[in-house]
Structures are given as structure tokens and as C-alpha cells.
Length: 283
Image (cartoon, rainbow, N blue to C red; front, side, top):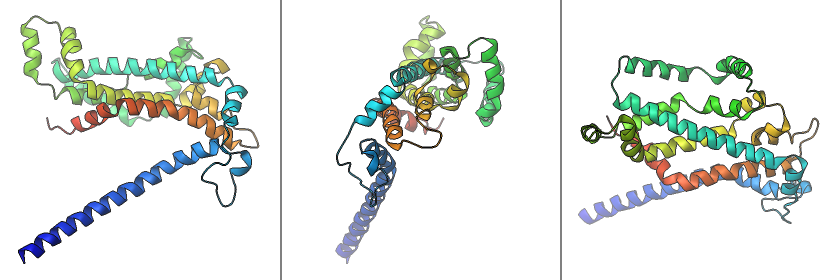
């Protein structure tokens, strides 16, 4: 009887694991299908886009749509603008948010918790509410249609400060106190101790900031007017005609825009996962 009970438990465990893996496989396929269809459509002849039944595998495969996108508009300039803006925004947000997160986590000053609470309340305010006054500020600074308007508003985020504060809280105070006893300044403690120990959190913030800046559409469309300052999302929107839509060129442009985000995540996925799980440590 004991053997039958153990066999039944093993069977139930195997069935549960099998069901879990099947659910993960189905979910993964469902999430990957839109991306596969985008890439597939970008490689099809235009006549096969709405073919019935659908052609899942392009035949013949053509790269002419990528060439058309690259030559129809200054796509290389759009790509450079997106890379530069996303990189500068990410560097600024990571640096300043980590500094502020360290201050709110490890330094004691009057009103620290109250200030942090008020900052968290601003996360409830949608961007559309701040968009008009922010636009007026950009106009007053004469920053419209420049990189300053695209970079500075995103160079520091309350979410980034919150994320880095929660991560830096996990660093033992004794480690920092020993550095203070040795005569290190607060910035040296931050730069040589807190920042290196916060790399998983920094990687998580970097990915979030880069993806958010890379995919931003509304703000770049509002503050830029010349073709030379457009970013990729705005440039892809320009492929849309007044009466018709060239789906193959749109999918080719979207595929080009998706590649850097995938590359960034693949390069930093280990630190990204560590940063997400670190937030689960109870303080």
C-alpha cells in the first residue's frame, strides 16, 4: 500500500509539472506570435500580406521592404536620434536616481520620509497632465526641436528613485559605517561601495528607462518639428499614408525598431532578473 501511495504521489507530481510546462509553452507561443508575424510580414511580397489562407512562412523571402524603408525616409537619422536620446536618458536616470535612492535609503535628514512620500504621490499623476506645462518650459528654455527637450525631461524619474532606494536598503549599514570610520566621503562611499553592490538594480532601471525612452512616441512627436530630430517611433508613423497603409514597410520599420530593445535585454537579462527578485527581500 505504501508503494502504491508513493507511486500515486509521483504520478500527481509528474502530471502537475507536465501541465505547468504545457501552460508555459502555450503562453510563450501566444506572446511570440505577434513578433513572429511582424518579422514574417516584413519579409513577404506585398501580395501575400492578406493571402487566404495566411502564409506563415514567407515564400519567397524578400528584403526589399527594409531597403525601401531605409531610403524612403531618413531612417538612419531616426535610428541615430533614438539611440542617442535613449542612451543619454538612461545614463542620466540611472546616475541621478541612484544618487537620490542612496540619499533616501542611507542618509538621515529632516523631512526625508515626508519628501519621499510626496514624490511617490506624483506617480499617480498621468503624463498627459504634466505635458502642457512641460512643453511651455521647453519653449521658454528655447529647447523645442532639440535634443535637450528629448533628453532632460526623462533624465530623472520618481520610479527610478523608488526602485533604487528599495534596492540600496538591502545593503548593510555596517558596511557603510566602516567606510565612514575610515574617512571616506559620502560620494566615495556611494561610488565605490553602494553603486557596485547595486548593479542588479541599476541594470533593471537601465532596461526600463531605455525601453521607455526608445518606445516613446507622444512627447517626441510634440517637441520635434524637423525631420532631422524625429525618433524611430515618430518616423515609423510617417510611413502611414493618408488613405493606404503599406503593411510590409511598417512591419520592416517596426522590426528594425525592436532589435535594439531585444539586444539590451539579452545582454542584461541576468542582472535584470536579480534586480527584480532583490525587491522581494523584507526590510
